[in-house]
Amino acid sequence: MQIKGVGISGGIAIGKAYKFQPLEIVVEHKCCEEGCEDEQQLRCDLAKKAAKEQLAALTEEMKNQPDKAKIFAAQQEFLEDEEIDEMIHDAVYYEHYSAEWAIESTYDQFIKIISKSKNALIAERAADLRDVKLRLLCFLTGKKKKDLKHLPENSVIVAKDLLPSDTAEMDRENVAAIVTEEGGSTSHSAIIAKSYRIPAVLGAVGAMSQVEDENLLVVDADEGIVEISPEASLLENYKERKTVADRDAEIAESWAGKPAYTADGVPICAGINIGSHKNTDGYENCDYAGLLRTEFLYMDSNHLPTEEEQFNIYKTILQNMKGKPVTLRTLDIGGDKTLKYKELPKEANPFLGRRALRLCFDEPEIFRTQLRAAYRASAYGKLQIMFPMVGSIDDWRKARDFALAVRKELENEHIDFDRELKLGVMIEIPSAAIIADKLAREADFASIGTNDLCQYLCAADRLEPSVKDYYQTYSPAFVRVLGHIIKQFTLAGKEVSVCGEMAGAHTATALLAGLGLRKFSMAPSSLGKVKYTLSKYTIEQCEQIAAMACNAETQADVMEILEKEAKKRA
Image 1 (tube, rainbow, N blue to C red):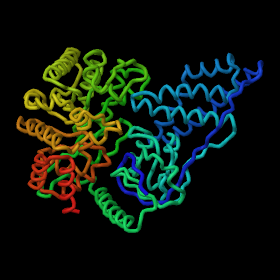
Image 2: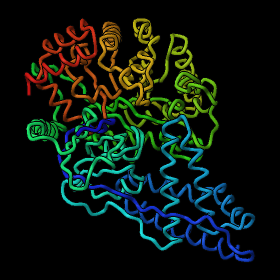
Image 3: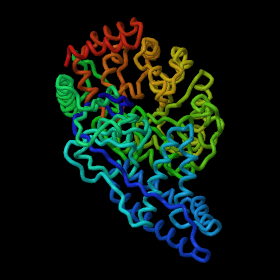
Image 4: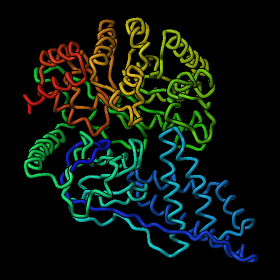
């Protein structure tokens, strides 16, 4: 029997099912007697205090694992939410609700509102609210929350969904894979799976009813497939594939710290994408940082970060990189990224609205503050600045002139910065891709954001499962667009890199090199795999693969070409 879902993290796992049924507390919807309101409010306050202390302890316990600590820190913020506190208070004193019912009814209202958000990242925060509600109810009822701290060896966790605390406290050493009925690419389950390279299939509808405890499962996260009690021949096939994949992963790990070269000795610049100043993974093994995402500064804060706050963080990253080049992308808020303390425009399609550079043009003081901080930090390392969502020469010139005005300000104030600092564009809008030759004459460099460029080119939301078949990263159309951009910047003598997910997909490595790409920037975990893959191909072989892909008719044809060539070098 087979169940399909969305593959996350990639890889193949074989293990026994461990069905996880989290604690469910059924709250009786009852009122308390008049005069007992103070007692019920005190119970709410004590539960909140205990939950707060527990979350603070968990945050401290996970301080060396920022991705996990962030989960509990975010939940502490919900506990301190004044609107939630006020609604619980009113439910107790005006509706005479019991403490349990006041908490359940209040949190359920917020969960209902947030879960309906069209923004996937906001909708996923409903899981945090459910987590906090359960924690509070556990303290009120004396019941113990179930967890995944101790698991049998080689367990495949099967659940309807996993709460953030479930994933954070999970016995990672014994988890072979994760299968959930709910959850998407932005969920906590997905984030943890990617972080620890655990194969996962999410959105596997029917998993809880069709899988029994101890069932042998094959989880193919590359294809988004879960095989339940597979037949001997199919199981053997998967075991062979897993053996090859595990061997390649082990070899790739040994390649992480090596220089990147093709089989005929052509050097490739292998970089990393940086998403937070708290994590230094890959700094030692990379040649540069092709993408420093700065939105984390804004999204992880309760206010617009000041110039000084930004300067100190950019400076720290540059110093930790020890002279290696860093490409800072200016604020890229909008679309699926929002700020809790600043109202962004309500738009029918935020991905096509006032986001990234467009937002910065409309909020010049925010843009100016960030650019000042970036220029000042450039005195402490090799920094260059890149503008996202450039769609025209007008966009580029307006952004460039804004940066040059900030540069002039700092000169007049006698503030030190790198006078050689370069300004570039992120190409992620088809209109910019088409005029790559024009942009290459003026911009110092370019980086291709394959995620957004593909979704705009294919008119398919990359976060929407129902149209995932239309989001075609390997379509001949997309391959040709990539080749055009790379060719135009190369002809102009300007550097061009890819910093989208495609750069870290080893299946695309030879194709991109064949299109002329010599700079790849990726998640640190992909460095070894990409370097190892590059070592198997000569540039001539890569160019032949790229030519065949450009002349192919469908994405399936391109994938067949790439798979055939990869098998020759397995």
